[in-house]
Length: 281
Image (cartoon, rainbow, N blue to C red; front, top):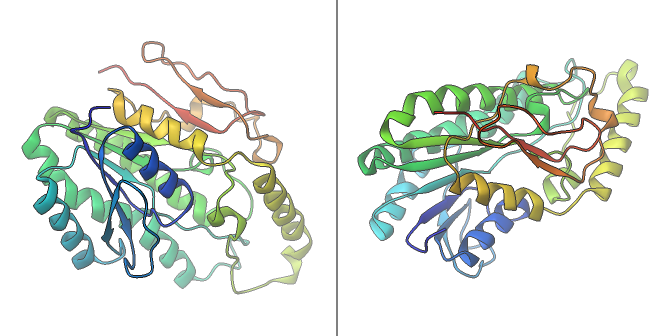
């Protein structure tokens, strides 16, 4: 990727976001990374930190304007910031669901809406939205998180059709288990209903075990960089993956990418880290 490219990565304080910002900087890009509080954030070599709370319209607009003032353009937006939640659907309060969607969907939308006018003016750009494997194959006790990622999938696929006329394309990267603080310290719903406790405990333990054995963010980051460089990338629909696959049977480890010309998925349900779908123009 050319060193003239300006890349914005949201949520770079740790995990996938930090690793992605670092990798883009190593590739010679001019990289901006968002954090909620720059005074408390750790510096990342080669990355300019921008204070931004994606849950707040004014904060997002201020952050984007600060980047435009410095770099005059944004070539790549990586929407990485997100939160998760474990618990039965019945245990999940409306407030908890709203908090989840405020970051995972509406936060992503705020940043997209703030960046798109500049990409339209440039007549070029790439938006990489970080979804999840549960954005197309659900897991029990992650219903609201899955719902937020399904929403990201639908938004991304529709948006790609809308903005390609301006030379802008949208990609989805869908990681499975990844060893990050987000997954290791996944919050749980405040309410507890005893009828769900036994099965929830089993699922939670399996989730934590898989995260402990999961690969580090580097594999996901490599796919992000690839998605930022390619043309015509968009995630496919869930119907392209065998419904027989179950979340609990997967073993994280492989990354698979479908070839740009084929329209087929190269993936085994039991070995699935992330997926990219290439659409013909």
